[in-house]
Image (cartoon, rainbow, N blue to C red; front, side, top):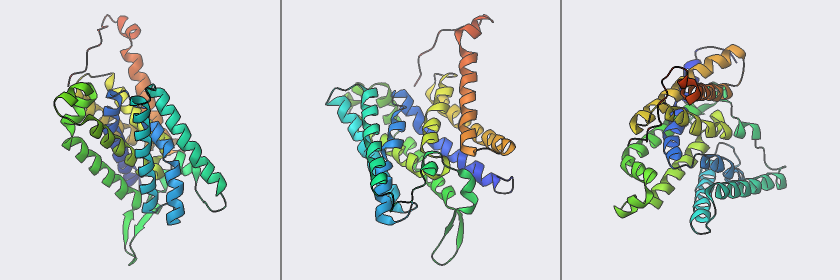
Length: 298
């Protein structure tokens, strides 16, 4: 990996992905459904394979549509198991993602001679390839890095979703029963949120990979939650942590000639561990500053 004029494009793309994941991750965390993102990231594998069969390309729109539909299916399965079958949420998540992921593995094994899926790209991603993965029109015009446009579109959609349904997301995250009383369709809002998580996961595959998307959904919001109990400040801190991890992660990856995506998540993880240590009661009690945990303010 070289350090050149493409560094800005890589950093801005990574930051947009981190912001998109962080915004959704805040409300996933408040609903105690953070690991649902992990389930979706694995459950979409059959959709990716089916989309590849239809389009014949890893980059076809059919792949995104197929993965998105499987993400929604995974959400519906988790919700059905939790509500109708009375299965614990963690068990519902485990059953759903292992079943759908296994189906995806079976499809790959059965049709391995027809499928040319780079599983390492899907699971780990490599944002360093962004400068050479260009969007070229049929007329031959080069518009720039393809993943940059995908990340920008994803950020716009996520930001618009949060702004338009902020009140509904806030109320349903804190008290689902109360939201039903005042006429908010909690089930529909939950499905919309899960659909956005599914789309974000799929659109970020090639940049940071499915596994690392999960980390960006969970780690920045969890780190911010250690520092504040105010919702708006929580969102702002989550965005700041995501941007900071993207910038520092890139430069550390350049310094150690390592994976950019892996280093970004490592930086975010270290920030969380440092925050947890600093905010721990044992650490604070040494300086006589230990305080009781405050409830989250909406």
